[in-house]
Length: 118
Image (tube, rainbow, N blue to C red):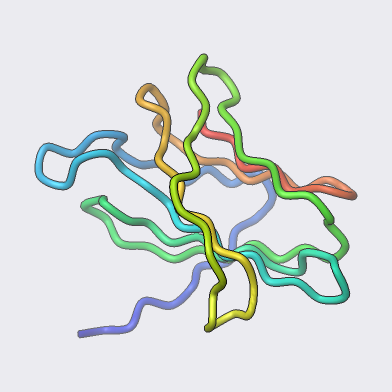
């Protein structure tokens, strides 16, 4: 089986997905946050429960907050599992996407990174 490499994301580059798949169920994403001196230096994103496979990398230096939300919709994304990522030595989050969203956009600000489902 081929190893999927991480694709580096630009600021506000959308990741499209199908929110509900007939075979796999509700789509989800896994976020792994890598820290250095208390600041987020990179966010690794992996698709789960989806037809497409993909791994994404967002680099940032100096963010202290990571926010997950729904930009245009009434329902927020649900974090349903958290833990420690042994591979990247940081926190990971498994997130169910909102029912009516079709893309994920990560925005970098000076002190925070925002993951918005649109």
